[in-house]
Figure 1 (cartoon, one colour):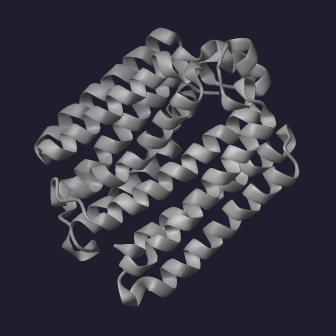
Figure 2: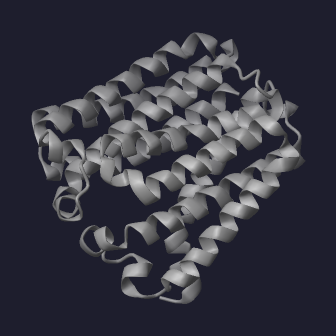
Length: 284
C-alpha cells in the first residue's frame, strides 16, 4: 500500500465525510433551512469537522496500537506503513488547524470544537479502557457535529430539533459501541479494556445494546411532529428504513447473544446510521 493510501486508511477519512455531512445538516437546521445557509460558513465548518475527526482518529490508532495488533492487524501503524512519529505530526497538525479555523465561526462553535477535541483525546489516551464511559464519549463526539453546525448559524439558540437529532445519534452510536464490545471481546480482554461485555457478560451487553437501539427508534418518532409538514413523508420514509434496521439488530441480539450476531449487527447499524443521517437532512 502506498503512503497516501495508508494515510487515508489511518485517518479514516470516510468517517470525516460522514461527520461533515452531519455538520452541514446542523448548519441547515440552525439557519432555518438549506436556502438560509451561507456557503462560506458551511464550507469552513465542514473543513473544521473533517480536520478534528482526522486528528482524533489518528491519535486513536496511536494510543491503541497494541489492541489493533489483535483486533485490527491490517491497520497502517501495526503494519508499519506509517511511523508513529509521522502519525503524531499528522494528528497534531489536524487538531491545531481545526481549532484555529473554528475561531472565525464564533464563540459557540469554538466551544463545541474544543469539547470534541478534549473529550476525544481523553478517550484516546485514557478512557477507552474504562469501557462504558469510553462508549459514552464516542457517542457524544458523534452527536456533536449536529450541534456544532447549528451553533454556526444560531449561536447558543440551538433549535430543539437539533437536540433531538443529536440525541438519536447519541443513543444509536452508544448502542453500536456496546455491540462492538461483544465483537472485540478477545482483543479487549488481552488489552485490559473493561467493556460491558467483559465486566457484565455478553448477555448483559446484548440487552443494553438492544435497549439503546430501541430508545433511538423511539426518539426518532418524537422528532416527527417538529419536522416541517411538507417534509414529514420523506422523513418518515427514511426513518422507517433506519428504524427497521435498528429493530432487526436489536431483535437479533436478543435472540442470539453471540459474537457472530453482533458482528453482523455492526455492519447493519453502520448502514442504518447513513440512512438516518439522510432522514436528518430532510428535516432542515
